[in-house]
Amino acid sequence: MANPIILDGKKLSGEIEENLKLRVEKIKEKNGDKTPILATILVGNDPASATYVKMKGNACIRVGIEPRKIELSQETTTEQLLSKIDELNADENVFGILLQHPAPLQIDERAAFDRIALEKDVDGVTSLGFGKMSMGEKVFGSATPSGIMRLLEHYKIDLAGKNAVVVGRSAILGKPAAMMLLNKNATITICHSQSKNLPEIIKNADIIIGAVGKPKLIKGEWIKDGAIVVDAGYHPAEKCGDIDLENCAERSFAYTPVPGGVGPMTIAMLMEQSVVSAEKYWGEH
Image 1: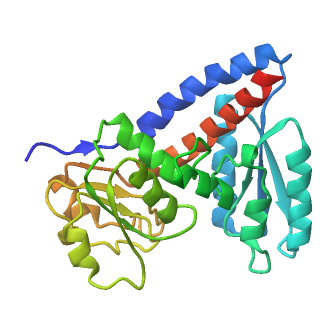
Image 2: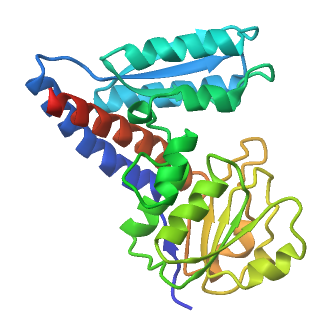
């Protein structure tokens, strides 16, 4: 078998960021040096969430967007959070709003996500955005699945007619990934914690997306030779993703490394969608 294609998200995300820098410069030139703002809301003190927010802030700076970090206490109520989102929806200099997941348990996270104005939903988390995306309408998609799709497109991976298995059904990863693949004419199976015969289902997959959040849940020997392997998980303590890549990467047609595959693309899509939002608004005013 020929050497597998390494789906290098780090390299592609760098190219995307270089392009976005030029686009942000144009926005500033047209609008008296005004800088587009991406607002990130962090509720509580989850250290992993704080790290992700910092990474996104650094990416903003790299492309020329202003990161606005809003930190709310662990005791914040849903009403207080909704009020803050309303304030950001009304701010004409804020072009993207990101609510870092997970929020503390007392927060109605779905209500908070759905309060974000559709045109500022650059992370693709609203129910309305999901519905429109599923129907093939032009809308900001969930950042991680959008990053996966961009990576597959960049490497000219043909999806039409392929059997794609998505392991995971979260509202911001598994479900939107399945709909995006369906819109590209793949045949979709979604698996989850209640699925029976997971190894058998995966053995028939031309494309496997690991999005379940459990280290190496998907075993390398389950994956057939020549499959396209996309690992959307990352577990820093175990230094691995959701798929046992060591035992299938070399047999695959293409695979995402962990780290350096899907992760950088998530942030690149968040940046790109924020820039598109600013271009849409300032292009019309």
